Image (cartoon, rainbow, N blue to C red; front, side, top):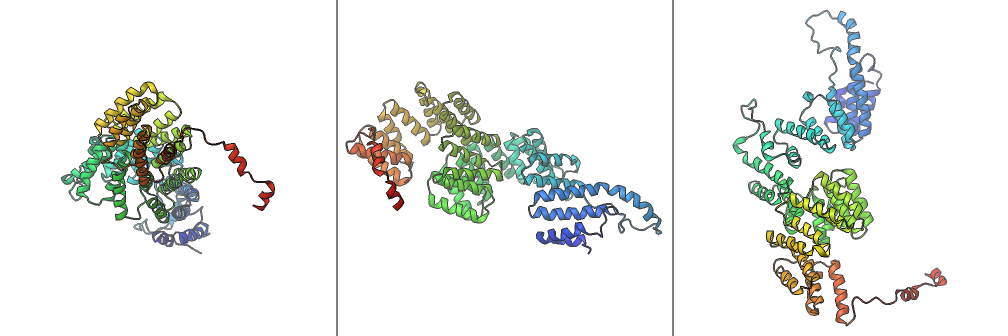
Length: 563
């Protein structure tokens, strides 16, 4: 039974991949196509069969079929040359078109097949094998799609210079590849250099492929991405905001702004942006794990549960979904949460939010050594404030003060106008009693740079308390009450009031903290201590004999059977 390749192609074109796969089995095993006399036909059938496997995500099988196709393709010239003597003698008409008979060389494009093999390897996270296949394609034969994959593979393999070269080649051919713009910005290429790549030669219509008459919007986009990549978050947000005025309800811009706001701690604003995105497109998955982290911090468990439920229904194969699951399970089962985040990184080993969440989990599990590795993974991909903060906390937990100070100073160099970076240096100095004065200066500098920075105020208040300046701590924190409805602010104020025996004020603030966040550990534990104080019991006194309590609750062996 003959299987015309046109029928197989039709099935693939219409997305009927399962049927194409079954029909492909007939095509490649047909006895009417002799590998000896018509190897090019065999090669073409194998490629179509490989395409059906690729579309069904059977990448390993597709790789083997594509390689078989290339083997048959390579022997085609020899077979054609041997057969041509016999066939040529039978041709009597000199003007007969060479395109109508079996003398035609194979229509198979070897470079396209190599690209398909590389794509399969890439889908299996086999970067080295994918890169080897791509390097077998001559640079002049690579199309736009090939160059973009080559760039991403070089970047994944940490061949930065080669990656930059390929990304630049993409933009020279098409200035609208936003993936390439973002990647070049993250690799440290300046906005000026990126803009210079945009083609200026007119196309057939007489117009340049890049519309310079209205280029300001694209210049803004490039500059915004370069600002964010260089940790100039304020400048990036301003440029994105200007773009948003020109393109209202632009989901991509809203997501970029939300992501930046989440990084710099503008959590409420970031949540509003994410909610706006969800109202425009409720089926979006991109960056929704970042949104889940913010809902956990707020905390808003109802919205977090609904978000995770929605994401599971939309696409349970995306890494963002497993990070969101990890966030949801963090308090219930840390080991389960860790397994979810590790699955997200198996799906996409370059998923930054997965590394951040993994580091957070390791810290909460008191495994700072493992946390350092996770945060380092995030930094290698895209360093931002959160990875610096995580590394500092991890090194402090390991009592590695020098390493913590080095990371904090690196953050300050990378973000010279960031109050958060200044606070990081202060946190390191505050970890030792001899460094409190230095810490105080850094916290005060952070507050001058960003007067509404609650984190710096809480840290400075803690220093005041440690040095017996409770009045200064109260004055500082009370100044933030009008602008902040934050559980940590009320809990810290309650702690200071309790230390100065102002128990009623302390009670009021602990209750306020628990109203804002019923899960606040600081407020709950502080309230337990306060209740003991109000009863005249020393909160630091040891509990009653736990051994006696254990004896009282022991079950007799006979009773155990009954139970």
